[in-house]
Image (cartoon, rainbow, N blue to C red; front, side):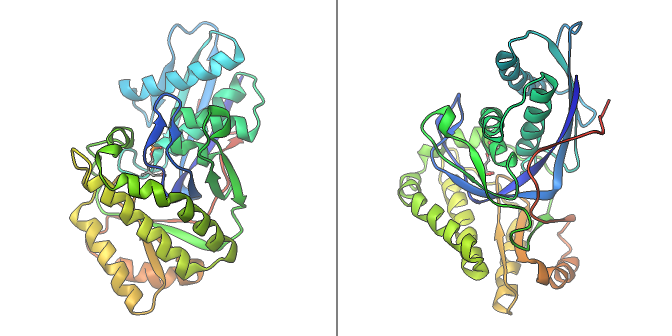
Amino acid sequence: MKATAIGPSNIAFIKYWGKKDENLRLPENGSISMNLSDLTTTTTVEFLQNLREDSVIIDGKAEKKKIERVSKQLDRVRKIAKFPYKAKVVSQNNFPSGTGLSSSASGLAALTLAASKSAGLNLSEKELSILARQGSGSACRSVPDGFVEWLEGNTSETSYAYSLYPENYWDILDIVVVVSHDKKDISSTGGQKIVATSSFYKVRLSNINKKIELCKKLLSEKNFPEFGKLIEAEALELHAIMLTSSPSLIYWLPGTIKIMKLVKKWRSEGLAVYFTVNTGQDVHLIIEGKNKEILLEKLQKVKEIKKVIVNTPALGARLINKHLF
Ligand code: PMV
């Protein structure tokens, strides 16, 4: 059976950085995120009895490293379905991959849902999240809807994401500011392997549960200024760890810093806007929906910006009827 799923990327407000089990992708800490409406991957999967190898095309290309990652995830599905068939997979991102916009989260969430459906499995949201997590940690957060918490867990069965609030809970936006189309030189997976080389990492872990609780409280109160302050400080803490890892990880470009400084300036002038950044150069601006036009107007005047992508909070991974082949 052919199945197609669409998976959203997500932006973490409290980040996942460091694993306590590399193989199972069990995180050192829990995290909190929001699914993004306009950064998505669509994937069609069909298991076929006469295929000798998995055939995988992502954005029109068959790249060895990506095929291996997809095949590994298909193996997990084959194991549960208890059959040996290879699959044909075609996947399309609506945004560039490898630049820090979390295409592995949207991609692995869409793949997990489409593959499990194509294999005839009817997995629960929790089971899908657990399975997606093994393909890419942050992908487990792209399975449930809206605003999401990933529970750290100590075993594979207890480390999964669930929805804290639906996508229409809070009218906030993630306006992604693309400052370069360059691919990052170190992947998130690579960066996470050296996290313990930063002497600040222990300090982060000792405070992280308090931070998660505070983030959940501010979300429940819809306290935008305090929420914004918290997530911006969290992003800077993450990058302090990256900068002080060995070898150091410098994901920012001059355009990244320019935007961060402008955000602080605009805030001092009265606009409630906050930033967060992942493993890449692009900046996510978090703002209340009512301030969208004011911010977009300001962004139009910044010459370093290559592209702006406006995201509302979104549904998690879901099946669609329009197949890619
Ligand atoms: O799931 P990965 O391996 O792409 O790692 C994600 C890492 C961050 O984006 C920096 C943080 C996060 O929680 O999304």
